[in-house]
Image (tube, rainbow, N blue to C red; front, side, top):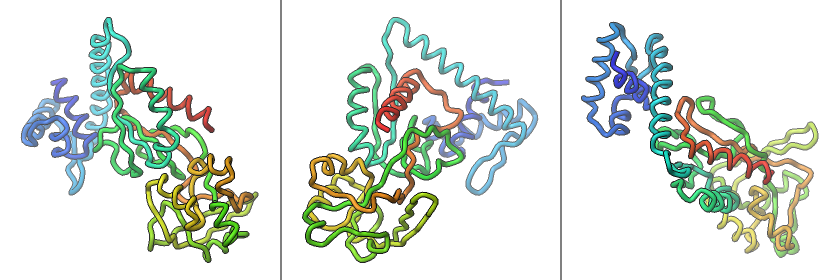
Amino acid sequence: MDLTGLVLLVDILDAGNLSSAARKLKVSRANVSYHLQQLEKSVGVQLVRRTTRRIEPTEIGQTLYRHGCAIRDELAAASEAITMLGRGLHGAVRVSVPTGFGQLVMTDWLLEFKRQYPEISLELLFENRVDDLLRDEVDVAIRVMSEPPEALVARELAQVRYVACASTEFARTTGLPEDLEALRRLPLITSSVVGRELRLAAYRNDVRQEVTLNPTLASENFQFLREAILSGLGIGLVPSYVVQEDVRTGRVVTALDPWRLSIFGTRLFLLRMPGRYQTLAVRTFIDFIINKAARWS
């Protein structure tokens, strides 16, 4: 059996189709298809089924996929060991972080990591979607959500608390909401989309309440949301880390404190693709972030 073809099978199944595998490998689709056919010919059975959207493994294909993953990982580990002989810790890590948490909390963590491991190349994507880590070839993603996608390996890092808040001037002139229903009558600043209903879930003891709201100012840029709150433009519904320093200095006050608020989820996860070999650089980064998150929470 051709080991190159076996590793290629892993690349095809990970990519989901021949075209994506070809782009990743920087070869033609015809080349990928040819080597897959040769592998199937050598083992004498069909290894994949082609659907309209994806390629799925047959039972034998799934068995060979597992062996192929192990072989690929061993080859990667051997290559890494040889490359690192006589050198310090190095490598590359591609990381996707959420726009708000990444900018306002993780920036200091990431800079510290880079100072501590200068030979590790760090590439950062600030984004909020989680639909295709494979397409972006992301090693690690950090996300705030209710539940992680089943297809990914997830490690819960911390809890994220949302707050209803306003500038002290807005609180003095307009007042703060005394209950959840009062939020319907006030201008809202949040990370949802203007014109699209926002479902705010709130928990207090064993009580769960949900209220549908309509934001009047929305952005995925949490620094902008903070400035809008400080400008007195309305009630902010944001993670507590966005305004924690302003609350401490008295520029911002919070409301509805007995309630635990949730918009997009309150759990911080570290996500990665299953079955993908983790280099020493990636493992080092993951351990570093886990440690930082434990201290932050």
